[in-house]
Image 1 (tube, rainbow, N blue to C red):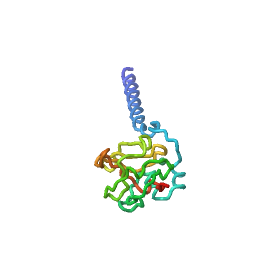
Image 2: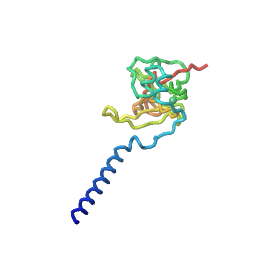
Image 3: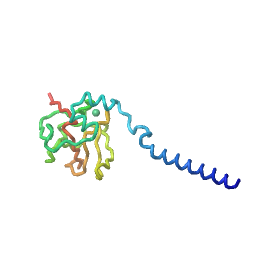
Image 4: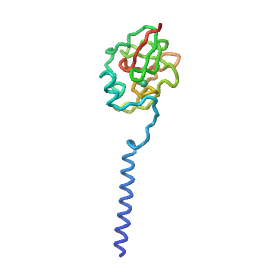
Length: 166
Ligand SMILES: [Zn+2]
């Protein structure tokens, strides 16, 4: 009888531990989304409407090759929009030549236009910059930029759409 009780106790403890373990493992997928985006589409929908490179950058955090985009050397006055949802994210007023081959800015157009996220991918500690309206990956921000902010928003041309000022 005593043995039976021990077996049951062990079985209960083991299943509780297993349950806790499986819950913990499921946490990332089961957790509610961190941000509520105004513009939400499925991956298949994004793939259908975006050019391949833009889709890879915005939706899968790909980085275009340096000097490969069409905006790193753009010096025209105007506005930069998210290529996914069309939200205004940067302007030519804060663009500077970073000599990196990627369009670089020292500040977004407004505080709420982009969201900064910790990014631990590729064994690096970086800060990812995403569009606050659709969550699209725009690039990263580094602290080696010029005055007045000292920040360098290193963006992908493929994630942006430029509209010349009238
Ligand atoms: Zn967007």
